[in-house]
Amino acid sequence: MTCDLCGNAAACLQKEFEGRELDICEVCWCPLAENLVEKRRAQAMLDDLEEYEETTI
Image 1 (cartoon, rainbow, N blue to C red):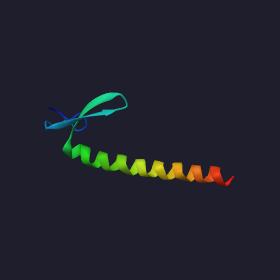
Image 2 (tube, rainbow, N blue to C red):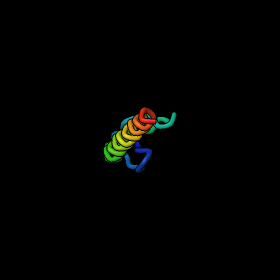
Image 3 (tube, rainbow, N blue to C red):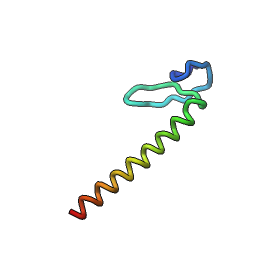
Image 4 (cartoon, rainbow, N blue to C red):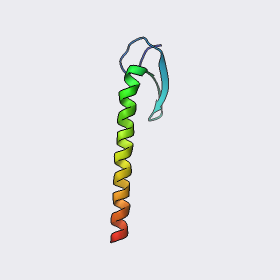
């Protein structure tokens, strides 16, 4: 299988992003997964802040 991100032949995981199925190797997946987790944490913090601001108005 060929990784859709780096183009290298490797064992890949099938992941869905924005309605598209991609084959992603472990080398590409690990940093991508870390970034997704960080973005989710940041979004959760923003959501909490917005909720707090709404309750204090």
